[in-house]
Image (cartoon, rainbow, N blue to C red; front, side):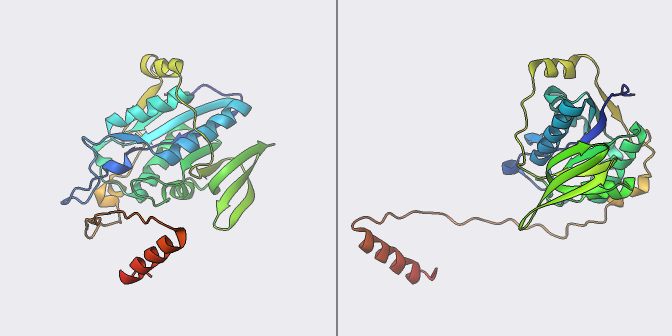
Length: 270
């Protein structure tokens, strides 16, 4: 699939469909996430990345392609992205990619971006709820040999330069670089828009979603899947949460607080 020549920015946003956090399950034998039969959603940080890219598209024009890697049902995430305003979607799907950790994932997505042609900005969420590593965006920047700006909360483009505000532990930093680059977007920095009815119809009816496999983008089969993943899950432990109960302390405030403190001390909490 070839994208039309844009008058503004050419952007890619990488999105992942993840199990809802409250339904996360691990296969005790394979030690991988169980995805079948589990309700899923677009990774929240990826939604913020998509919204940031859409805001730039609204301002500067151009085109936005949503890219995802996973099983065929991940097309649902791409349909949502197009409903929100992305122009096209690509699903990189191949059984050989099953079990990939962040190293082969960033490699595979980078090869897909190279296959699709030149882009000005590649967006990723800061991390995913099913692994929380934050590795894929920086890994793509390394594979593509591009500068990167991480944990971005605001971005503006002027005369081919990108200025971004990024969150750090004690506040914010402002960095500037040139196009092209990779940006990872901080969770909660904006309010992702809802898909529109026309967008949903477009996603379902006019063929704006295509698929690629490992051979299409020239992946080295030794670098993907479980065999290409250096991360090994050694063991899994299930944490049993204790029963919780409440107590109500009534009466005059000073007496109630005194009783609360006495009980906390008696139970070794203070």
